[in-house]
Length: 93
Image 1 (tube, helix red, strand yellow):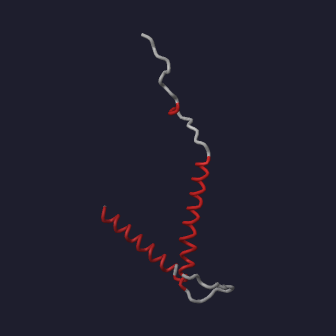
Image 2 (image 1 turned 45 degrees about the horizontal axis):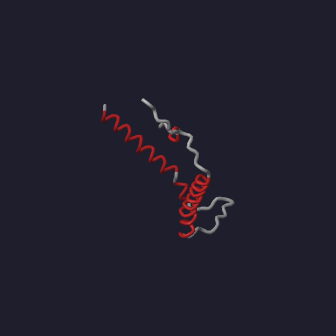
Image 3 (image 1 turned 180 degrees about the horizontal axis):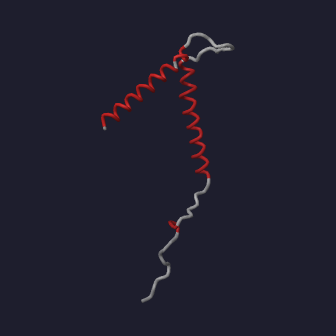
């Protein structure tokens, strides 16, 4: 039974891959569609700036704002760690 399941899975994967390749072939067409007016392409520097540098800078700005705004408020310890459990009075025996 194990070989039959493996063969079935392999056939399914191969068939799915073949169908996806056949269906995606129009994506490689060289003819333009009606009304298609593409602009100029991006250079490597522009692409890296748009898709790598800009998201990293945006992440750092947001993280910095969160850290600065979080530290500006006085920390209030609402847990039981600020409760003094030792007695100030000396017990007499």
